[in-house]
Length: 389
Ligand code: KIV
Ligand code: ZN
Image (tube, rainbow, N blue to C red; front, side):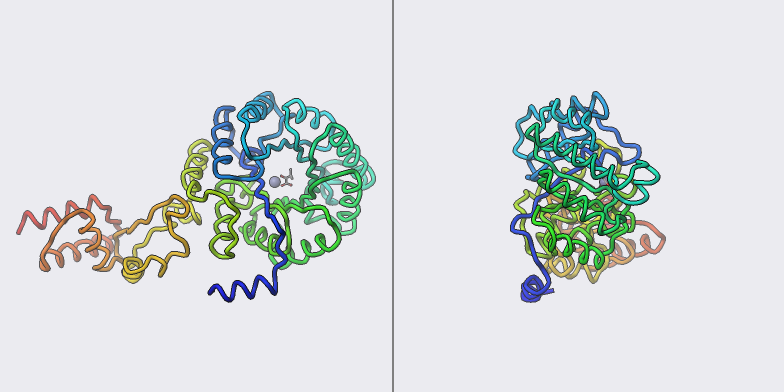
């Protein structure tokens, strides 16, 4: 899509907020990824890098949940980072006290609002849920905290009850209203209707927290932003409960490259941060993961490599340098002569036409036999050919 179309689209279909905040929850929801547990030192290391990336807010954890969570929150606080630090709390004064003990001044408090959560998890009436939320917010505000309120499972909550509780918590002083799509059931068209309705009815800034159960978290978050959401909850590598949350790198780069909206993050740090989080959590990214996967900027087919060698934009929507990644030309059965010539040049190997033809055929036949040809393989094949001449 060319720039003119994007500008037209923006004007006609978007209602962008003046400022879009990135609320990173890698250290909280991301750490809730099954099988992941970070040490205090690891959490500090990730928090420092998120800060260097330039995220607006870092949810450091759930201080009431364990001594380690409390310690990491306190120690991250001691780093005096620029990012605003947030602690999670249920709508319970004990949980809020833990956030205060951790010396954090921004609380993310939540309570389940959907019929499923009310009836089967909390076993509370609508009135009780509103009461607990308001008491918690009153308490947090009395202690001088900034309050973000999440209606857990908001997207499966009756709209009139969602609006009722949002009205009550706004009256109690909530500073941000968060809309969790707790089990990732939204689609872009439903997101558009929901966020537009909320924006039309509330002046309080709104945040979205979208899970990825159907692979739609990034698309839905982008749609919410198009409709005026003021903040997006994201995680590095899209980590989080089950299939995870909206991925920070996907959202930020889609905004920057496809929407022309630069949030001011130092995106050249994305690849190394993704690798750090992958290493510390043990959750490795698939090769085809957008932005940070091994193949995000890898090219094999002759037609693509030919284009890339002339102008990388032919087959790349953004440059690998933008995210601190690198381009890779892979040799295999789809390889064209241009790619092999470029690789040989890179390795300072000079072949005459006859030698080149043999090397090229060799690579194709390896590819046809199901093999990928590494740079070392190519060098070995070329040197053998040179030696036999
Ligand atoms: O997905 C969710 O509903 C959450 C809440 C704690 C906001 O993570
Ligand atoms: Zn979540």
